[in-house]
Amino acid sequence: MSNKFNNQYRIPSSRLAHWDYGAAAAYFITICTKDRQHFFGDIQQGVMHLSPLVIIAQQEWENTFTVRTDMALTMSAFVVMPNHFHAIVIIGDNAYNGGGGNMDRTPRKNAIPRKNVTPRRDAVHRVSTNANTKNDTAKNAFAPQSKNLVSIVRRFKSAVTTQARK
Image (cartoon, rainbow, N blue to C red):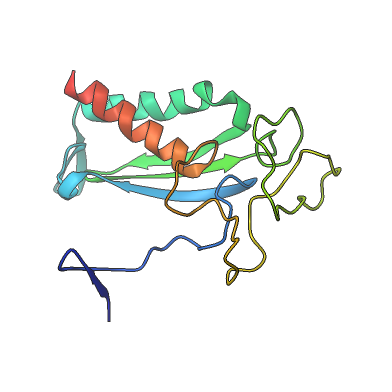
């Protein structure tokens, strides 16, 4: 049974609690429109009729990879549906996830070096190995997110919303 928050039922997060969403990996994402409204078009007789907002979403998604060159992103397939957006984004080894370069983050206590890369003094992996400790260093807690999947999605959603309102 789902827990209640603010007197409403909610489902548990589908995010892996101690996975570093800045780690080099391929990620499948789905972003739904507010209230699942058909902002991007409608399907009539099996054919998708696109709204002008699709062009904004496509341009902003493609711009994500231009703006975030420091994260070694690779754009894979994406599709815009009437009320949601699917995409595969690949985060490569970069300075923020221990793949090399100059880190602009201070290594946290209990951080673990990444495997399969040349160990560097300042290259750390942000996943905690013990979820039951009080000093859990996982970055996926309720805290500011940067240089990870959350920040990519946040920037994309913000840019699409800003352009759509104009």
